[in-house]
Amino acid sequence: MRILLPCGRAFASFVDPLFSGGPDRLGGRIRAWVQSRIGLAGNPGELEAEELVGLAGVGAIGGLLGGSLLSWALELSPGMSTAFALGGASLGGGLPWVWIADLAAARRKRILRELPYAIDLMTLSVEAGLDFTVALARIVDRLKRSPLAREFSRMLSE
Image (cartoon, rainbow, N blue to C red):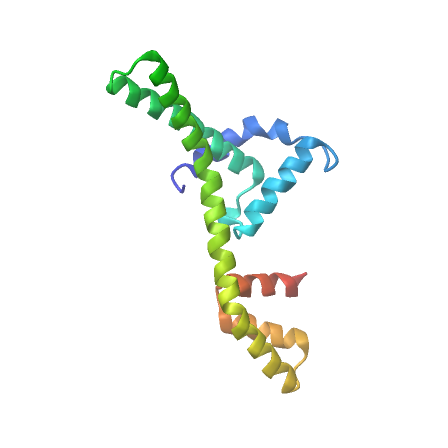
């Protein structure tokens, strides 16, 4: 994905008009949905909704070309060549969405694994007389770069 991300960012300018309009229009709702999926994944690479959709477009074009080349190399019939090309486009266009879903699942699993430890630290800190926000800041310092620490840090800054 790191290799394709610059291509997706370049392709995002073509996708940008699809997301025009406010949150009450279809483009705005789709953009909000895509951005929420990126947020669940922890916003990898400061990715925007347009860039992810652009990345899916680049993947679809690459998959289409790959499926076409594979069917040409295997000397398949025209019907099978079309099936290979469409299958490659579907696979290439779907990979960024699978990547985001996989990142979100891994992040969620890590947060759930760290949460009991954070709650124990919070309980001990508050019972020892610390303020809630100071206790949260200590948890952020203790957990360092974990997704839970990032969420707590964001909560403290908001």
